[in-house]
Image (tube, rainbow, N blue to C red; front, side, top):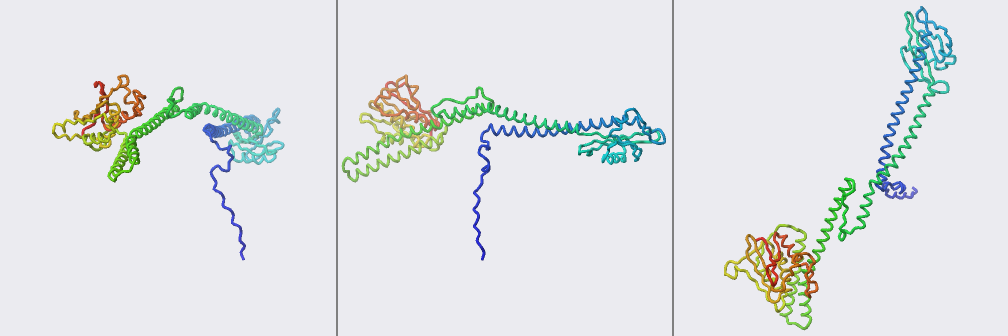
Length: 475
């Protein structure tokens, strides 16, 4: 019977850096740049330290070799190779010359230090190989010893002098230099890290200032911009890009507010018709014919609202400077607008198209869709009906290669001081004149006309009254 072992729990998925303390995770750009600078400096200093200490050790070894050659040359003056046998001459203070010196005649050892030990075998090897050679061996107490051989050639015989030198002082000097190099590297790295953090912090200080400014500013209400004055070239370029982005954001938000206002302005009339029809319908019982008429009126107003939304949203989405595709006959559109307009009882709306009145072929078309033509003329007609005393005239005729539509009323007209502000959104000559309106109809008409390659303008020559002229490309 097999015993069942408990199944080990599956390890939870590990994320990179999950095992590291959070304080070790570099989250700031200054910390990351400082770490990169510290790593680069450490790598460079390690390379320089290795190269420097290698060169120092090589130089110390050459100094030791030069000293051994000098001692060998001094000892060579005491070796006589002119006779049939090699002889070592006795001189004053020859004990100083004989210290750590081996003299060979061929392979025969003539002299050696009193306590040579294992170094004699190394010296014998150098003498056997002949020529000028140097090796490093271990001496007493495992201290390094440098041995060099120097051949001495005479007229009849030849000898080899091997000198030895304890390298402990040289090794101590090299170790001291190595330790000093490490200490200097540590100090340099600490200074490098501190200066890098200080320099990067000062360089990023404008970024912090820009961040605080962006937090405090409002993209719509504030006119403040980052600018490029007193900033490094990179941050100046970043500031210019952010300024351009802020301008685009403000333009988009302003356009959205404008579109919302235009939709509210244009939808007010059909909504008012729907509310009026429903109130009239609920006031008393209606016949079947009257009920159908109410339904037709509501359906027509709802269709008008849908057309308004489609037209304004399409215009806002495209925002084109060329005429929208399609054509529309002018006369039927003007008649439909006049019939649908909520004209006061004392105001008559007259449509004047010269071609039709003269019995000629009066088919006058504009190169824009019918819905767009309605949205251009409708605010002008609503504005004329609002201020007219007794009559409003809609006149359409050809104007060169295009079509001109004039909307004229016999009201008080536009004050001359306000004529320059007519097409500014939200501006009215007298907000307390008792008439409704938000000051968005005329700017909407001009914007839509310009999107179709046309124009809406005010004619100041007509007095009293007001005349607005729409020019559109011909269909």
